[in-house]
Image (cartoon, helix red, strand yellow):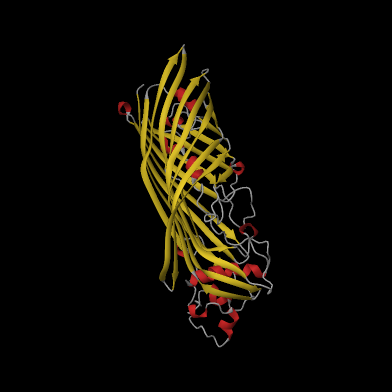
Length: 512
């Protein structure tokens, strides 16, 4: 509780300086968070191949670029398993200020208000012989790296595992031309989204995007409600892809496909009310505890489809792939159980439960990808690929409910993914590969000077491909992803970090 008090008052300090500054992100209510991560799932989970965009004859073409299907020489079946673990943590670092002489008690967690002083002026509590003396003096921890887990104020961990994909492709000669048809199912397991904010303020006193009230000038009080906010979405989205590849010439391969997305998400949002502040002027406020908790828990169903077009240019030592994914309307039908509870002095006074339902539609613009593979010598293959997802042009429409309108999903920005890597033939039956991916997020942190590109997650993937001859082949992959960024305010800096690891194993059987 001492930490919560200090969190809020740091944000409140912003009010005494400027009105048009950014304060701590309040948190974004249940919407389409995590969908962008699921839709940009790496093809590495779908079988052998450096990159699905520029592959020719690899099983990843079933899902990524149908033009690569025409390189398949025989009936090919692929399946695999996937395990993912994600971790989040955050450390808030405060900057002292000469205003508000009582703030050090709050900011350092030295003072916890006594409920008997509900409704009293802050100045009365502190300066009338310190009537409220429930404070504790302790030395702060020193020497911790800001982004480290040891310095974190809170941490969260989630893990999922299961079937990654099943795919089949079959080459067919029609009128002397080579075609290949495919169908596949992929489980997009990495769409886990988590958000937490222990100082969800409404209206927000220090940021215009959060319904910031006018500056308190002593003529009237402004009430600021304070919540402890938490949101978790665990998605189980799937992709069903059908496609056809066509060898136009020896060097030109074309493809057409359809990807259908569906699935569900277990969703949870909690808003625990800590209390409220009545702001009087720049140096006076009244604090009172008040506990009104709101919990939304339930499920959501997703559906949408998009066309895929592909091109692969193949030469002796050079290959290039192009992919296009059409615009898609992704529909979310949600049903939540809303539970309202009111407590006083930790005693339950009232409780009520109801069901709310609605539909939201996210229109995702068309996306593009280009990949290049260079094969300068027999055993080496080098890869460079680029994907553009113009999420900044996405449009969101949803039902607006009076009891579910405390905010909305932040506007997204465009996402451009860069990947490069290499494959080396260690043995005639064994290939090893290593890939690096740069994946910027689709959101902008508060206080960021860069407004058109989100924080960057970097990923390193290491793979092992084993050819078992007539028994097929096995592809093993291990990926480490790391992202860290800062939320910057006049009062404090939030050091946020997210890490993820994934392990994939795929089996590919092909009849030559």
